[in-house]
Structures are given as C-alpha cells and as structure tokens.
Length: 628
Image (cartoon, rainbow, N blue to C red; front, side):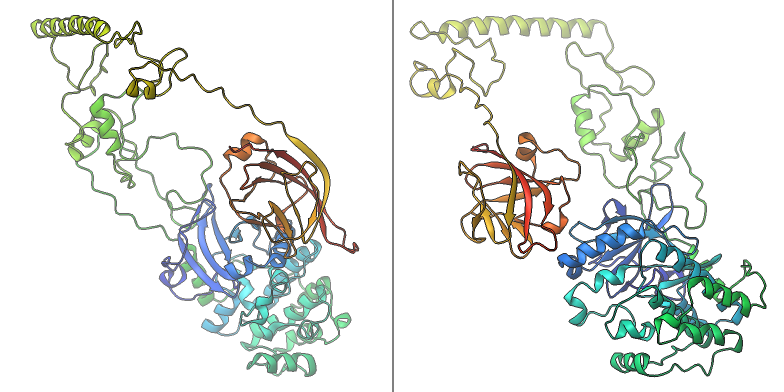
C-alpha cells in the first residue's frame, strides 16, 4: 500500500472523486474522497465522529481471501495499534476479519517524500538531517513494538509541517504471506530493499536501517542509491554491488555509507543514526523550525490541508425561515462533511424536513403526510425549524399531503396552539353531528341483534357483535374459519399446543481433526473420517469449517456474544464455511442443519505446532429437531 498522498498538484488531484467501483461507506465511515491506490489496495478520506480526518486503507479482495495473509495482517495491526510515536501515523481503527480487511490511520496533510522530490527536486542538507532524525525516532517506537517495517521507502514517508510521518509499518509482512506476491502483484519497491531481504534471508531491525540510508540518498540526490531499471537488475546490484554515492553531500556521506553496509551487524543502531545526524549538524541539538521544508514543498501541505466536503444540492426553502440554525463552518480538515464517520449516539434532532413536535397519535391524513416526507438532506437553514413557520413551509412544499383541515374521529382531542389545524366551530353543527353519531350507534345495536338471531344454527350461535381477540386465531371452544365455511360450523378445531423447546445435548472437549466430520443426529456425536458428503459439519483440510449436506448453514457470532437456542434461531448472517483462523478461544458458531437440528459450537483452541495431526477442540450443544 502506498502512502496516503500518492498524487501531486491541486486539491482536485489530491482528493479524487469516488468512482463507480468505490464503496460509499466502510464500517460506518462515510468516504469523502479517494486519496490513492497501491499494490495492496486503495486509500480513502473519511472523518471520525469528533471531526478528525482519517485515511481508510481498504485491502484488495485477493489478499483478504488468503487465510495466512489474514492471520499475519491481524497480528501486525494489533502490534501497530501499540505504536504511538511523534513521527508515525497511528492506527486508530481496523477490521481484519471482515469480507474486505481495512484499517484507519490518522490523516497526514502533506505530500509523500517521493512526490515532493519528483515535483520539486532534492531536499537541502538541513531538511534531510531533520527528515532522517525524525524517521529514526519513528523506527525506535516501531521496533519497540516488535515490528520490522520491511517496506520503508519514500512513498511511505509523509512530510507534515512539524516533521515526517512514517506509515504502513508491518503491512509488508502480511503481504509476504500470500502467493499473490508471486503472480504479478507488486508489494514494495526493489530499489529500497536490503540485501538480506532481496536474497530471502532473515529480516531484522537492521533491515530498516539499510532502507533508511537509501531514503537519505534519494532525498539528497533525487535518485536511488542503486539506480533504477528492472527489478531483478536492481536487486542484483543491491546484493552484489556498491551504491552510487557520487552525488551525496559531504555532510551526509558518513551517515549514508554506514547505513548501506552489506553486513547487517555493521550498520548503526537507531540511536547512532540520530547521533550521526547531530554530528552532521555541527554537533548542535537538532531543532525543527516551522519552515523546515523548502517553500514549494510547504505549499503542497497547504493544498492537502483543505479537506473536501461532499457536494449537496438540497431544495431551496419555500419561504424565509422564522427561526433557523445556521452553523459556522471553520476551514481546514478538522471540519467533517455532514454525516461522515460512524455515529456515536442517535440524533436527538428530528429528521430533515419534518417539524419538531411532541409525540402524539397522528391524524389519518397526517400519517399519509409523514409517509410522503422526502428522504434527501434538508438545507441547513431548514433542518432545525420549529413552530408555525415550519408547518407553513411544509404545507408550501407538500400542499397535497398537508390538508388545511385535519380529520377527526369521536373522542379525539385535536392539538391546540398556534400550529394546530383549524377545527369545526361548536354549536348547532356540532349538535347535529352528535345526533347523527347517536343514530348510527342505535342502528348498529339493532343490526347486531338481528344478526344474532339470523345466524343461529342448530343451537350453535355466532354473535356478529362480539369480536374475538384475534380474527386470525380461533379461540378455545369456538369454530375455526375452515369449519364455518364448509359444513355450517358443526366441527371445531382446537388450538394446537405450543411445541416445547427440545432438551439440549452437550458434548464437551471434542477434538475435531482436519478431514473429519460430525453428524449431530447421532446419539454420540464424535468425529468420523471424511470431509465431503451428506454430513452436517466438516473440518476441511483447507482450514475451514464447512456446512455439509443440503440446507446446512453457519453463522459466526460476534466476539463476546453468548449463544443460545433463541440466538441461533434468530441469527441470519449465514455462510457455508468459516475459516479457523478467524476463531479465538470462546468464539461461538451457530449451525443450522438441513435435517432440522440447531447446534452451538464453542471454539476452545487448536492443536499445538508440534502435534502430528491438525485438529481443533470444540464444545458442542445440540438442539435436535429445533427448526421444525
């Protein structure tokens, strides 16, 4: 994955609009723009609920399909979340188990070192010393968290106003786990690898020191120390030839040459790198001024600081609002576009376009009007209107759904106040309405009595003026709808007795070996050889649980979620297979079999590395015939 800012130029080039194949949201983060793309995926701009801009890095689906990549990626993200350095972009959120893995880091408003050098040329010596010293501090906290960056290169170094930021530490380790790196997918840049990395030998923190020397050479000369060209040619020179240091400034020569030693043991430590930077700076304390970068590079930071807001075209207000909320929008990336980022709490304000009123039983026509409300966002000047003016605006915009006179029904007390709909005047007209209603009630009672006598049949009575509690459910002792239709109601159908929940059967400590299956209808649930067939659950040798048999389904419960019969009955996040590397101790899986059983699996662990067989240990609870 390349850096957050792979593009140069004006804001329209930095903040690219979302294309048709780009998602609009990632786990509740609404995406505002695309920042770039690299070998491992795409980078998007979004905002936290508090308004801080973040970079969302979405991993390519091909990597997400590789179980070993997911395992390593999870480890590296967990380690990266412990890195809290002044010169790193911290990982603040991630999902390593979803259909498409992603992580969110703090957004850094600045160009990458690669973009800055390509656009404006090599940096002055003073800026290079501050750059390398800051990167060395970043490596100190990264290595302290047990991480080797493995992909330290100019595109993974962002230039902010207060110093550099190292990003994407540890991600290359996860990429090494997938076979995709050998099938046309490029991860990393050969020009900035270390000899031991290019030769496939053990990688250590000294590997990052070699890359640090390469970055220093690139920043001070504008070219890689081992040249450019085909990947195999560059890698051969890194392993077997000396770097080209002819253009390195004299003050940087010792720093760069020592970092580029072929032998990892001969390279300086992080602390020694910082000391070399201080020595090259006339042994004075390194001070980072506000203008530590050349002015053309600093201008690129200003362009990237103007975070974009999504374009919205709300309908114009029908009339000038009497009372409106008009927020003041500060400039800069700290202002999120409305609605961006995952919500913290449900909104306390009414939905856009609806007046704020106390809850009440709606009139029949008001219910229709509410259903007809538009769903597009309202203009900010309309969004928080209250009082009679709000209703006037609503009537002006939707005259067909807001009648001038609300319909009433007996016993209803219409709303009062200046915003209430006008009601009919009391007096002679009201008395006439009362007489009509009374007459209707008398006729209704008389009609009910007539029906009582007409519907008598063989001493069995059905009273039309008595309504059952549920028209669709026959009551005990009453005739069912089917009996009334066919034979004059001479037969009755009693209510069926609710079926009791089946008694669970528990089986603990089952060691399910890869290539074996379970059949939950057996009195003794135990592993049996075979992973493909009309079974109900198999541990496939490919490393996943498989719902065998017709109609079998699996559902992975959330971490900490306590499974039960009701939970498994209501769960709908179905899949046919679940990879074992997604499971941790105590994680539970609901199984619905095609034969009608419900099963709760509790994962307890996996076979040790030195075990001659591969198996998982699970506890099983079976509710037989629970779905029928």
